[in-house]
Length: 234
Image (tube, rainbow, N blue to C red):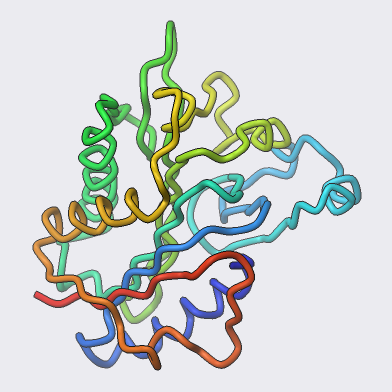
């Protein structure tokens, strides 16, 4: 699903979420090649001119999420929890640590020992002398206390795409994926299911598939795969 369309879908769900618990949602999807610039992004972290990126078929989008620059591509599971934060966490830091925990537990099911690094957001794996990022996190909390944006977990994307940027603005650490670490790639649907299971445990929620009408916003057309829209409830 193109990034801009997913962003529009998030805005639609966030507006509903501000009014009723029933509309807390978790979106799980993939994006075509896209570079997003968060609110803290520096243009010098974009290493390839935008006209060349356009020639390569890579979209560049200025986003209202937190963080610096990141790269999305097929083979990366992107999760967007749209929820009233006060129902689940005491604050943004607790929420960020919770998202990291979901991903750490999911990676553990593939025998990958992922960790947090003090002072940095996201999930990391030790690769030789340094750590590489396997999952990025960038979120936004709007004026009504509803979250948007979320996490991106590398399953088997073409990691060469990250050479077009300074990932998350961190020049001395690389990126990795489940496929790069394990030598094989689990199915996207399987990883999605494990993320859902761990999300439910970490945030103490019940997660069910959303009704068809909730996942078919008129202006949203899925161009890559079938996005999942899941409802959350305590």
